[in-house]
Image 1 (cartoon, rainbow, N blue to C red):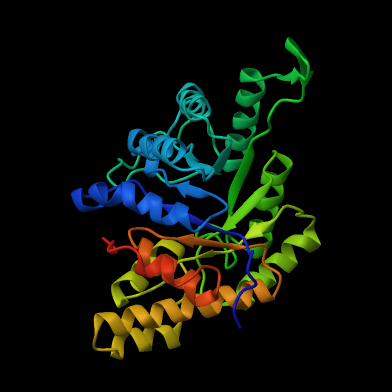
Image 2: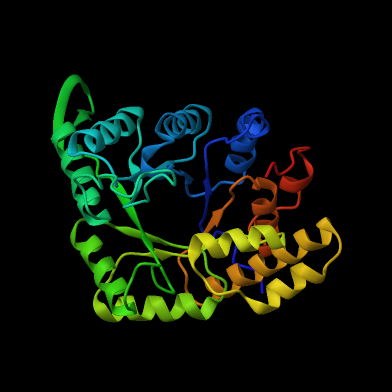
Length: 319
């Protein structure tokens, strides 16, 4: 069953990690922007390690497209001063949407590496709101017919998304703790959640039901990443802590061709997206991660974009 036309969708991409990705970035952004996403999110390296490159991609989206951009921010290992500086840089660039996560320290960090001043995503959410309020306490609105006059209006508020984990955060002790953490993020001012990748629609629906019963009111956007090779699937499992989806894993292992495996991954993701939207999900968030054409193919299979968006470009996936 295809998704209804008009279903919101968004993309997540990371800053270029190799020369091929850097060279393809301008066209990648144009191809993704051309299909009308609700926003494009740019990831942020562990411990802020990709701050400069993330900010550059954010600025390029803002300057070269009309698509709103969501900047990821992590706080682990950062002082209040460092976190504030990073937030101000993104706000100064024109960003009004953020994904606030605690994040991870770089893999090569020593065991006694400092964890920083901010201990949770909820604290980072509060800091973003506070800095935005200090930076823009109010907004000046032009008065029609009086060119030099300005009225005082409410300041522009930021959208702050947070992470959600349908099958539990890897460090969580219980599903109750996951919901309590989401409630704390909401109390801190978060107004959207984006889930970690998952493989079964029932997991998302059960999580949303638990969250709503506990008092979470903001939209919970499901995140989907197409698994197009056994290696990609293994990496997804490492990142998410999810259990191996047996059917998908077997299909990818026994299929002998790259194109066949890609087709399996696209079909699985498209069917998952359609099921989620049919069940009431507020939209679809696609993790592209070096595979923009695969993400577009999922949307085409769902009926959300036209075939022409896949055939008018020679661009290929680069990861």
